[in-house]
Length: 344
Image 1 (cartoon, rainbow, N blue to C red):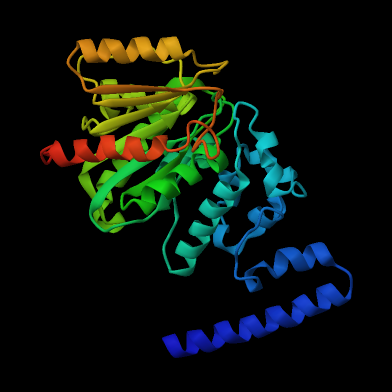
Image 2 (cartoon, rainbow, N blue to C red):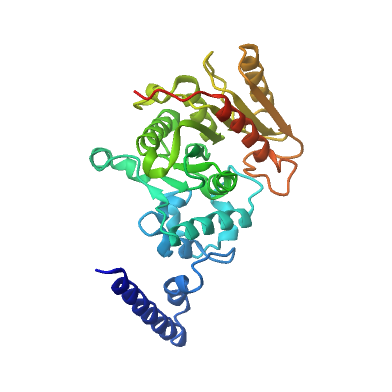
């Protein structure tokens, strides 16, 4: 089929879509019209869009349920997106505009022909372990051959809070010129299983670096809460220790509000942030770990923000706002100082 013929078919499809939208609306089937005609509204979501709109959006076809905190949240179809913070009880300072901007960036990337979702387990692996079908990588492509960051949201290993502290953070990283991925991992099985998913994701990205157009020699892992435990594991022990195929540790680790305490003399430079009023991750615990890393001669920074609790993500409109730019500066300096890695 020629591109010209393909274009004619697409235009015919759009005419048919508009005609059917008119029938839906004139017949009073507003919900059907809302879902079916979404692409005619510039394919963009708003804070008044619903979970159902997100799930049915053509740009997210085949993986939309994995963008939600839990797969079962597809049943919340009438919940407006400005209320999805209710689905993430361990999080605070939820900002709907940050989330919508990040989702719409994915839609824009799809419209530009980019593949934004990838399975990092092979089909045979998925067949052997069906629970791995809940996993995936969401890709915010930025500058070709720039380093990459894997963002690992939290959720107490009960859900994956990508809508709050995955996609908005990855979008911001991408806006800086660094390629960013958001890890969707298995929940309900604890720290070890989640870290195994992260290790396989590192393998997948580095082994497909040419296709992603990323610099496989330089990467960082950023995690929040439960996700921070996972990225710290990879930093301390490398992906190889968790079933991965590489022992290439990240250049930099960024940890948001976590009670993780273990470390190694080989930990990468680490940047840590937490809220003063965190009721889950004690600031004292994080401060102590950072001081230990410093005593080992590892570059490490600790930042505590007043009057804010757990799970603030970008911290828009809070005392924590701006932490991300400082963390980017920290990691960028590490990317610039590290030598290329020999990949075995």
